[in-house]
Length: 237
Image 1 (cartoon, one colour):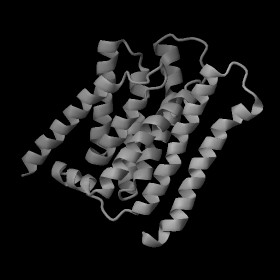
Image 2 (tube, helix red, strand yellow):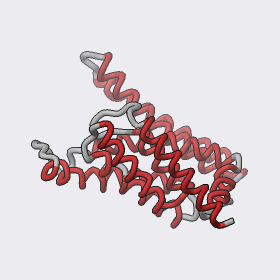
Image 3 (cartoon, rainbow, N blue to C red):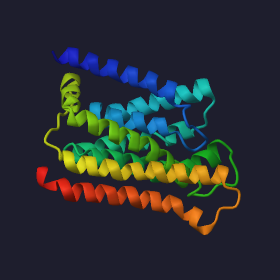
């Protein structure tokens, strides 16, 4: 039985590696690869920090070899994958901590480490220590939000614990579904914020102060909706 679960875990990791390489070009620009963070958090939740780290490492190496991606393929993935899995495990299965681990691990730690790697190894000039932080955080918010929403739905259906059990991973149950739903509504605001930024930048040549503030209004509206949802339904938790 133990050997079967180990084989299943390796098979699952192989599938995630293949999927990660295939979908990585979606929405990708240098310094931002949202789909990598979707894969990272999914692996962190289902197979733990070590396997998630290995998965991110192999995906990064394959992307560098076959797609010509710079070392950002590694620095922008491996730290977030490991920290996501660690915080998920330490929080006893709280999905929001898997999400935050990816944001912190990639958006801050990975972004800062990318500066010396790209400057002294890759020979890129004109960079600063915080050069990649905005784009890395943007990527983690997009991909991380998608992962959080997907996993929240799966957890509500009881699929997360079943898959964890089948893979021989630590199984966590009894999470607060209302809180997860409320947080999911809130994190949608980050996607709305980024969508507003892109739309204004590309379609409004001379935005007014009000137009520039729309991204903040969208973000605040989703966060407020999440708070209202939690307030109205917390008694059901």
